[in-house]
Every structure is written in C-alpha cells, then in structure tokens.
Image 1 (cartoon, rainbow over the protein chains, first blue to last red):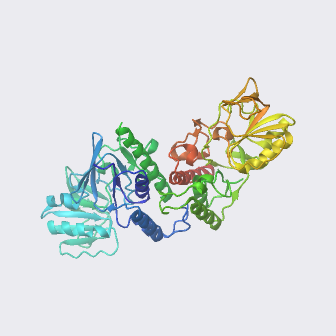
Image 2 (cartoon, rainbow over the protein chains, first blue to last red):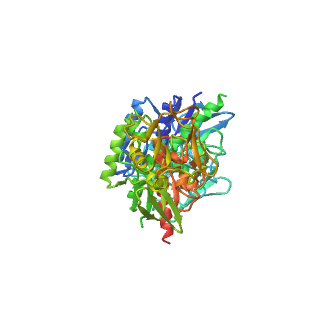
Length: 292
Length: 292
C-alpha cells in the first residue's frame, strides 16, 4: 500500500507530487505523459511567479524535466474509480489496474465539456465513460460515442469492433478513424433520451443527411479525459460539478483531498500549484496522525 | 485612488501583483528591494513547480527580473497603518506617506519573532512599532529597543539621538551602532512590565554585568519588518496572530484580502503564490462589483 495516490498531472498534481517527494512519502501519480493539454496549448503564461512570459510548451518541458530529476514517474493508466474503505482507498483503472493507498489527492481538473442532459441520469443505464470496462455489453448493438479527444480514438475503434453501428460525435479535429460501421457526426446532441435506459440521442436538427434528429441507440459512451469527480469517487460532495473543499483542501471524505481546477475558480496555474502544495501538506499530516 | 494596495513583496504579494497587472489593474506594491529575506536566505527550494532545486538567491533574481519586465515597482516605504473607510482604504507609512485604494491585499508574512508578554497589552501605552512616529514622545527618557533586523539600525540611531539612554536588544548579527548612550543587550526580555504604562523590561537574569534583571524604562520600541496584521489593520479578525480568511482569501473586512504566510501554514512559497493569485482574482471581481 502506498501513502498517497494523486490523480491528475496538471499543476496541482505535480505540485502535490513534488511536495510529497520532498516530505519523503511514497505515492503514485496518475496522469498523462504530456502532463496537461491545457498547459501544452497555452500560448504564454504571464503571471506565474518565477517564469516570465513562459510558453505552455516550455513550461511543460520544465515540469517534465523537474519530475524526471526528482525521479517521479507518471502512470498513464486512466483512473476509473476511487473507493473509500476504512482508512484506505482502492483506486481502479480502465486498464484493469487496482492500487491501494492510505490517502488520495484529486487533481483531475475541470472538464471544458459540461455534462449533457441525461448523462448523469442514465449513468450505468446506457451511459458509460469506459469503453474497455463496458464495451462488451454492446456486442452487435447500436452505440453513440461522444469523444472529446483524438487520443481516445483507439477506444472508438475498440467499440466499433464490438458494436453493429457507431455514431461518433467527434469533438476534436482530424478524425482519422475509417470503419464502415462508424458514422462521424460533427454536431453535439442536445440530450440523451430514454425511459428506464438510454433509447436515443436527440439533436437540434438531423445530424447528417441520412440520420434522424432523434437517433435510436442502445447505449452511449462519453470518452473524456476524466469522469466527473462525483462519478469517480462515490459519496464525494460536489457543487455544480466542482469538489467542495474545506480547511487544508480536505473533501468530505476522510483522507481524500482535492486541488486545482476541480475545486473551482480561478482556473489558474499558480492557484492550482498552491492548492496542490497545501493538499500534500495535509496528506503528510494525515499520515502522521494515522500512525499514532 | 488606486485599485489595490498590496502589502508585502514575498511570493504572495508578487503573485498578486503579477495577476493584477495581467488583469489591467492599477496598484501599489509595498515591500523590500530584496523582496523577502526568507526567500533570499533559502539554500535551495525543492518543490516549486517549474524551477528545479533553485537557490533562494536565484529565485529572488528571477522574480526581480520578472517584476522589472512587467514594469512593477516596489515602494519601500514601511506601512504603518491600514484604515478601512466606506468603500476605500487609507494606507499610511512610517515615512509619512498616505495612499488611497479601493482594496487591500495583506501579504505581510508571519513574524518569526512572536510577540512577547506585554507587547500587545501595552501597545500605545509605552510600546511602539514606529520610531519616526512616536520617538519624539521619549525625549531625554530611557528607552528599550528590540530590533530584529540590522537594516533598521538607523531607526535605533534616531531614537538614541532623542532618548537619554537606549537599551538595545539586538536580535541580529554584526551590530554596528556605536553611541555612548546605547547599551547592547544580547538577551531577549521575558516580558514588558507595568501598571498603566510600561515601567520596565524583565529579563530571566541580569542582561549585562551592570544592568538589573528588571530594567526600568519609559517606553519600548519593537522594530520588526512588519507590525502584526491585527495592529496594522484595525478590526481585522485574527487567530493566534494569523489572519482569518474565507472564500477567495477574503478577510472579515470588505475589500480586504490576505494571502501567504500571514494566513497560516503551510509556510511554503507555492502555497503563498497560489493564495496571492486567488486574492488578486477576488480583488478583480470585487472592483467589478463596486462599479455596478
């Protein structure tokens, strides 16, 4: 069992990792090799103390180099769930991994794509965030897939191999997938519709020349960088999708802390770094008290 | 009238200044040319995201260069008081300056020297923080002076020119002052004693061969980098000397925010920078609402 699992490799997660490392703690850092799409894409960052007018790319490289020198590795498995047990947590990944830790820091950022109507309502009843977890349920069925990021196209391919039809709402540029049973849609559905389970995706108007505005499906996969925190962590208190935090970045779950964009505005690198630092100190103190 | 006055040039104050600048606000930044003694003296900083294992000196130079490029100047006058009026603040300095602003960010750090017994009790009744403000009250009288920093020796000289005797408790190395009426003491008094007003400084044992443990004085000047926040800002809510803050780093005084070490642990550069960022965003929003 590790001391802490940090979920997210943006400024908050990195800051937490650097501080836990300095404090001599063992931890796992789940994230991306490129750390954060938001950072990489930043044209220039003007108000980060110590780095004048740094480009997102240069900032990202500085952080990657710092992590390397500190011997902090990033685990690129995608976290699918966080389960609070008595004085420990189990963290599962879409790749089938299962990890235990004494504490958790949520630094999973905030989704630029808001949940659409019906998404949360039908979660587990036709809506899924994880292709490899739930894909098998839709063998020879019709699937909607809302994909926010080209890097997740391999999950679309995986689903296309199982399903009879895939209607791919592609929210990214340069769609490369080419399969006979995949229809690419460049409009966002207004809502997910159904009675007991998902029955259709509803668009404001016909999504393509041949498809109806109310498109019948058996299920819909919403592929984004991370699930909403409240879905990731059962029982987590959130407000408008943001994690509620108190003193020392503590959430309502004992041993679970949050930092960065997932706790709310301002969505700023400096703020995220500061909160990651605080959360790591809180974890250090929490671990100290556990041992007593 | 300026949009904001930032008090303190450590990481919190600098971060707030950079963000207010990016947000197009006018502000004054009160602090030191060398920014922060704490930063300058740091051997190496290990957990500041983006700068690997940076020395305090190098960090300080990077920050100074960044401020220069952003055309942010540091006013080196020492703030002596912050007065909250209706929708504005008046800030006074020991040098006699008087400045108005719509908001204030307290980033004055935390004193490593705790108040001694009697200090707060006798404030204004024999205890003063400001030589140039109150020195004239002690012409030809006996003064205790507790000085935390060699840079403030000129204030001791100023007092020595007025008083008949100065008992200088020097909490710094390399005391250079040489005046017949100044006796240097290298022990800290246990407390400041009196009935209605200060009557003596009490030491655990005789502070020098010739002076008594209970040393009669007419007043005592405590010269430190900044007065405690609660003394600086009348009516400010504090707890154990730390500023109480709520959402967005707001204090109990409308328009007055706080950031960095003065709000409490962890005493970390990254945390201070994060809080300065948040406070600056709160000020920006506060100013927006004022204009409505």
